[in-house]
Length: 470
Image 1 (cartoon, one colour):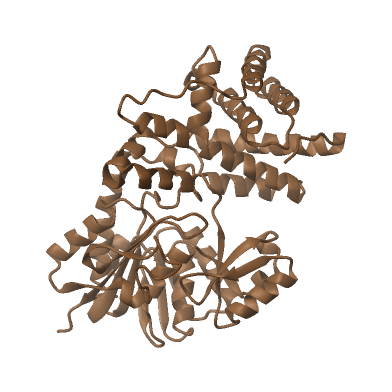
Image 2: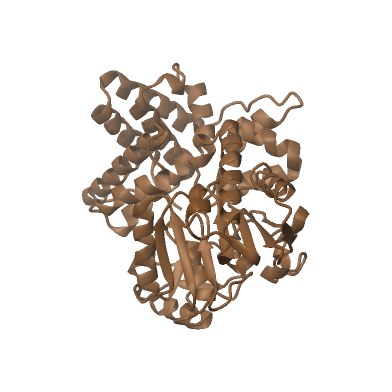
C-alpha cells in the first residue's frame, strides 16, 4: 500500500479509530479484558464507518500479535524499559511503532504526530516528549535493531522474531523441532480465515455460496466437511441476509469436527456439557435434523441466552438449555441417559492464537496444569451421563498434550468400561489425502489432532470414546 494523506474529516475519524484501539489495548494489557470481547464492545458503540472500524481492528490485533517484537524494539530505542512505563504510554508507543513498521498506508509523520497527540491526552508533556523521541528514532532507523543473540539456544531469538513468549517457544522446540515450531509461530501471526457452517436444514452449501455472492461476499467450499464454507472476502457477517435468515453459523472447520465426531442420529438424546454460546450444540441439532433432544449445559447464564438466540435464528427447536456446572452432572438426573455426550472443554486455546492473539501473553505453564485438572474433572463427570453403548467425545482447541492425550489416557486408565474409538473414521478423514496435510492426523488412542496451517483450519484435538454395552 502506498503512503497517503487525507482530508481533515478522514484524519479525524482515523484519530478516533486509534483512540478506540488504544483503549482496547490498554484494557487487555492490564489483564482486565479479552481482545475480541473488548474490541467488539467498543466498536458496537462507536460512530465509525467501515474503513475506520477495519483500521481499529487491524491496530488492535496487529499490536497484540506483534507485542513481543514491538517491546523488544522499544526497549532498545527508549531510555526507560517499556515495562516501567505507564500502561497508556506503553500502548501508545506500541500503537505508533506498529503503524511505522507494518502499515504502509499511514505516513510516518502521521503515525508519530497522532501518537504524540494521544500521549498528551492520556499522559503529560514529559510522556509526550518521550513518545515523540522514541518514535522519531524508530522512523529514522526503520525499526532496525540488533537481534537477540542465539548462542546455540534459538528460543530467545525466535520469541522476539515471531512475537511469542519464550516459555512457549522453548516448549514447542522441544516437542516439534525447529522447522515445525517456526511454521506454527508464523501461522499464529497470520489473519485467521473466516469459515462458515452452512445450516443444511435450510440451504445447501452451493446455495449459501451463491447467496453470499449476491451480498458481495467471495466464498468457496471448505476442505473437510460438506457444510464448511470459506470466505475470502465478505461484508460484516451480521449485515448479510443469509445470516439473518439463519442459513449459516460462524465456525472454524476443525471445530466442526467435535459434533461430527459424535455422529449423532435423529431421535438421540445428546448432552453438550460445556456448551458456551452454542456453536457445537447447534451443529449437533443440525446433524440430527432437529429431531431428538440436545441438552446444552453451561455455567454462565449470558452464554445460554446467546445460545438460545442462535437456535431461534437457525430455526432449531430441539435444543434445551440448563445452567449447571458440568462437574455436577453426576447428580443432574441425566446419569447413564444420553446416547452421546460432548465435552468441548475449557482449555489454554494455544491452537487458536491467530484468532486470540492475547492468549499467548495471558496463558502460563501453571495455567496449563490447572486446566488439565479441570478437564479431568469435567470428563469424569460427563462420562456418568453416557448410556451403555453410548458415545463420549472430548475436544479442545489446544495442541498441548497435557490437555489432550494426557487427559484422555488418564480417563481411560481409571474408567475401564470405556474404550477408544477412531475419531478419524467417524469424521471420514483419510490421513494423507489431498488437501488434508497437515490437517487430520490421527494420534495415539484413535484421537485426531488438527494442526494449524496457513490459510486453513485452526489447531484442534478430538477424541472419541465408547461406553461398553452391558
